[in-house]
Image 1 (tube, one colour):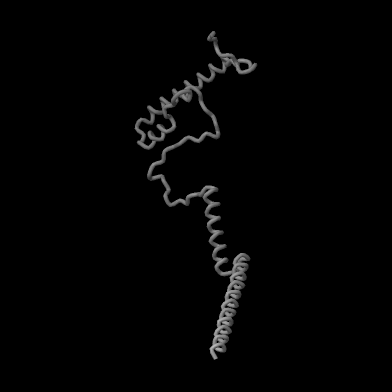
Image 2: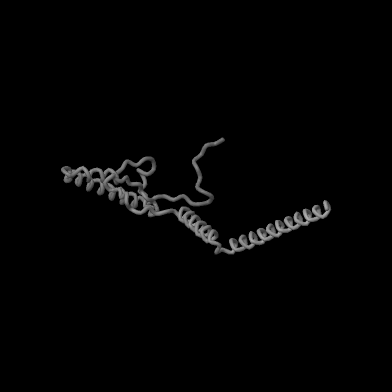
Length: 160
């Protein structure tokens, strides 16, 4: 199989960088490096806090990051916080799922409280059903007692 250079993507033309633009970018980068070097010499007697903050901003970039300046507004860089800067007592925001779960539990507790008090429709229906069953059982007990009394009365008549 022949191994040639990779072709452009599906008919898209190749893009070449403008030499003037490359020169301009290189000049700007050199100026920034020179300003940074002179600033470091001038601030050589700076405190340790300033040097640690510079380390965060000028961290070593790996791979393509070192070659290309990324200007993505959605990219959030992870900065380490010092223990003294942490705010432990700050209220922690809950995620949507956590909030919904808490709401669900609270509504369930409210419903159960009302249900135990007999204020919900389901509780009223349950209580009515229980009352009917209780009355049926009482009637059955009375009927059994009457039958038992009748049976005893017949046995008493039969012995005479």
